[in-house]
Length: 95
Image (tube, rainbow, N blue to C red; front, top):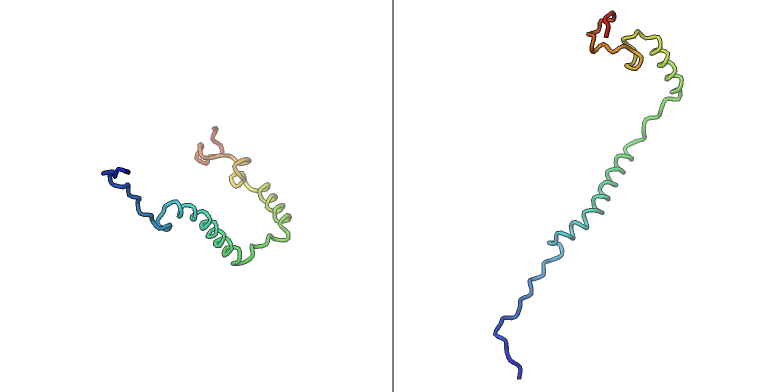
């Protein structure tokens, strides 16, 4: 004869619906964020074409280089001009 146990049967916890599980949403979040980024990029691209570079960009660059070459020392770029931050702008001051 089978003896009956006095211990209660273990209860199985109630199953939660899939949409209340954290890991489901964590897995879904990756592809959804990629689709959202793709949509934002597509809207940005379809708003209009990029500005076209000037047809004579090379000649404009040469003209700019000539301007810099004949500019006063204070107007030249920092690599060729004098740095007056320590001297206060006095051209005759010694560093």
